[in-house]
Structures are given as C-alpha cells and as structure tokens.
Amino acid sequence: MQMTDQPVSLFINPTAGRGRAAGRLKPIQESFAAAALPLDVFASDASGDMENQVALQISKGARHIVAVGGDGSVNECVNGMQGADEECFLSVIPSGTGNDFAKACDISLDWELATQTLIERIKNSEAPRRIDIGRINERYFANGVGIGFDAKVTRIASSIRWPVGHLVYLLAILRCLYDGVATPELQIRGNDIQFRGPVTLATICNGPWVGGLFHIAPPAMNSDGKLDLLIAAPVSRTRVLGLLPKLMRGEHLQEPEISHGLVNKLVITSAAAVESHIDGEVQALEDRFEIEVLRGALHLL
Image 1 (cartoon, one colour):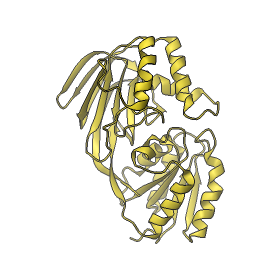
Image 2: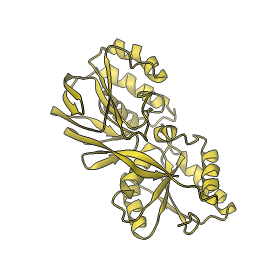
Image 3: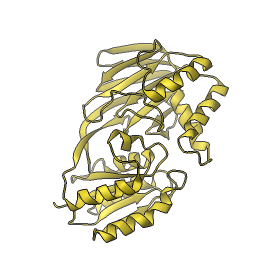
Image 4: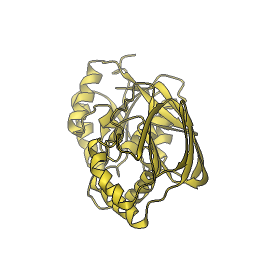
C-alpha cells in the first residue's frame, strides 16, 4: 500500500505543551493541503480519549496514525494501535513538554521541521522503521516507566500549570524534596538481575531521556530488543541535588548509588502499593509490575 492511497489520520491533544499544540494545528493542516495530502483530524478532550479514537479509526480502515502532542499522546496512540488486525504505522509531530520519545527517535523537536520532514517521507513513500515498545501489566509504553521518586515528580509536575517548559520537572523535584525522599522496598527479578531492598527509584527505559531534561539512560536504544533498568539506592535530599547535574548530562551511571542493567523481561513487586508512571502519565497505585519488551512491535515513519 502506498502511503498516499488514503488520508493520514492526525490525532492532536490541544492541551499538550501547556496548550501550545492547539495553535499548531492550522499550520499543520495548511502544510498537508499544500502538499496535496488528505488529512483527517481528531482532537482529544480527555485522558484516554485519543487512545479510544485511534482504535476506532483503525477499525474503520485508518493505517497511518500521526500524534501531535507529547509523550502522553504517543502513549495513547501506541496503546490504541495495539491489537489492530492490519499493519499500522505511527508518526510524531512533537508538541509536548518533554518529547522524550521524539528525541529517542531522532525526530526534530522543531515542530515545523518535523511536519515538513514527515510530508516529504510520505510523498517519497519511504518505508517505516521498526521500534521496540514495552508492556507493563495490561498497558504498553513507548519510552519508559518509573516507580518511586520519579513517579512522584511526574504527579507533581502534572499539577503545575505555569508555562515554564522543561523547568516544570525541576520545580516538581524541589517540591518532592520538601516532602522528603521515600524509599519503598522493592523486589526486582529479571534475566540475571535479582534485587531486594529499599530504593529511591526504579526506572525502566526504552529510550535514554525522561522529563525532557534528564539523560537518565544514555546507552538505551529503542531498537535493540532490550530495556535499560536503573535502580537508585536510598539517598538524602542533599545527595539528590548533587546528582541532578549528572543526571542531566548522563554522567551518573558510575555513581555508587546507581545500578544499571539490561533486561527483556522483569517482575517488580512491593509490600505496599507504590506510585508509578508510564511515559510520563501517572498511574494508579500498584504493588506488582510485570514488564517486558516487544521487539520491533511499532512501525514508525
């Protein structure tokens, strides 16, 4: 099937990027129209709506899904695409706060350039590439999962409405530190990794970035059939502040509190339900996480 045979289905979260995504829709539509590419547009109005819309449109014949938003929008599109009977592929026009998945896939964070590049690839009928995704319990993720401190940071960041871009995560960290650093006890089993003890966080990465600013898993590649597991031992407030610059530069893996390994499947359990996030989206408290990588499961244009 040629990619120009049917309309592109574009799904936009107008609130992404603290509302910046909404202002980009008209120029995107104009760019597709100028290239004579048909475009169907669907706007989400609540959490989970985009996922449902993607699944519905695929059932009606949509095959090329474009996400205009951030990592949460990518996550909803990926989940909506799972279970499709026909082969579908995803494109992303980054318009969120962190855009970690786009960075991992070398998609330009300049939304206008990303739009033009996508149009050229469609016009040239370029082949999609295969990208790994992960599954955690009954959900799928494109970029990563966090349990513990970073999940709390994500929850607080989502409540901050100031238009400060990536700095929202630094503000959230300071709020978290004011409350104190919790250290839930986790049991982690996967491949050759056997761990039990208190942690500041456990992060499972398909891509190398989280929160837009933090190069948390520099070696992570979303096409290697592996997930990068990082475990941070309990640390003080002062130590967290000391580690932040290294986290932003990706220079923390050799620090004594950090453990790093590669897995394709793991199980994490906790005596008490703990906070978690999936691709930057806050999840309900849970005490068991079954995680695995699905190699090459996503077609990305």
